Image 1 (cartoon, rainbow, N blue to C red):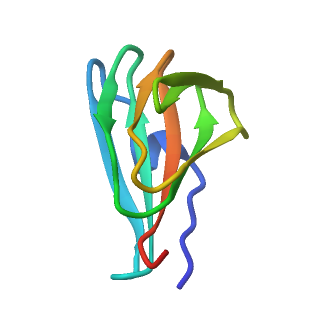
Image 2 (image 1 turned 120 degrees about the horizontal axis):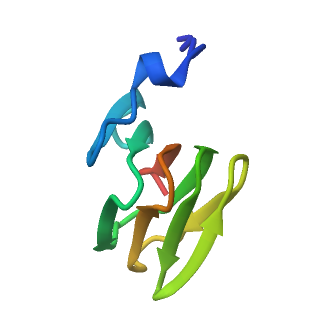
Length: 105
C-alpha cells in the first residue's frame, strides 16, 4: 500500500478555527497513522490512551503536553506519548502533524 502526499494543503487544508484529520493507514489492532491539520489556538484536550503513540510535527508549531509537561515541536520534531499517561496537543501556529498509534503494544 502506497500513500503519496505531495501537497499537505491539498490533502488536508488548515481551516480557520478548526481541527481536521484524515486516516492514512488503519490496521486494526496494530498501526494507525492519522494526518491532522490544526489552526493556531486549536487544541486536543488532555486524555490518555491504552497504547503508545507519537506526534510528529510536519509544518507549523505545536505544543504537546505529556503528564502536565509542555514541549514545543517544530517541523521534523516528534514527541512520544506513553500509554496510559495524559497528553494533549495545541497548535501554536497553523500546523500539520502525524499521529502514529501503536495499538498492538
